[in-house]
Amino acid sequence: MKIILDVMGGDNPPAEIIKGAVLAKKELGIDITLVGDENIISATLSAEGECIGDYGIIASDCVVEMEDNPLCIVQKKKNSSMGAALRALANGEGDAVVSCGNTGALFTGATLIVHRVPGLRRAALGTVLPYTNNVMLMDCGANVTVTAEYLLHFAHMGSIYMRKLYGIERPRVAIINNGSEGHKGTPLVLEAKALMEADENLNFIGNVEGKELPFDACDVAICDGFTGNVLLKASEGLCRFVMKHVIDDVTASDGGKAEDVRAALRREDRFFDVTEYGGAPFIGIAKPVIKAHGNSEANAVKNAIIRAVNYARADVTGELERRAELFRPVTSGGKNES
Image (cartoon, rainbow, N blue to C red; front, side, top):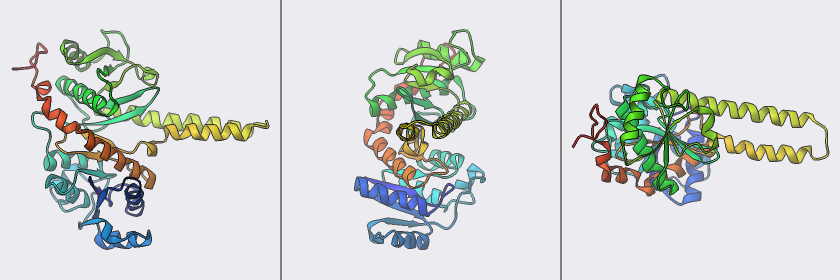
């Protein structure tokens, strides 16, 4: 297994990203290729006490910044660390790419350089929310605007992911909506709901409100990327806010066991820490591409690499190819075209 790591993207390049690679290599014993400024990579590995020869290095001459237009990945910044990493993956030089960089550029590059699974019209960014049960959120940022057909296909992709990685034979699929009642939702949501209800290959259970997601409401939650990204970031912020105030309150209180309570709360705090869950795959891309959190530090990068390894080993992309019939265009009546 070989992971290709863009070490120049995100908020903490390159030292923290390279440190994460070192942690992952020690834990997993895998091959890792680092992509970026060759001199900086060599100096950082030496500073970490690592043998430079134990890592692959691909040199690049620029960086995709967070504010860059996504199309720069195939235009002005073709030889960026992100672009070089994606080309290496497309050329068979590794099994997966991990990047903390610009989400839009990574999605655009994955689509145009690595390409989608044949037959799929859109890939999606899927992340697993660590609630009472693990919930796959599809999409959480790649596709701001969608069609009902895209949402149907996201439901199938999310179901395949949960089956392959979590062993759930018939994942429960729901659409995130402003109410559980069947008549609620935008015209787009209502159209997508009709398509999912008509698809016998899905275990579709209807609408789910955002407040119900943490309480075993479904296994796969479907929405457009705008809604999913807002939900994801609001959930992260709220969890941190609540835990901080509880810990502060316990710290300010008296009682002989206050320190034990604080320690227990800090252990629970890790449950909501995005760095513990690594990255999210672009499901539907022909080879594994993992988007790690932009402000990832070493531990988060390590966990993103672990996520990439697990995703590649589960052969989700191969399963998507084998189930190509699920992704045929649909007619207005909701049936797959033959």
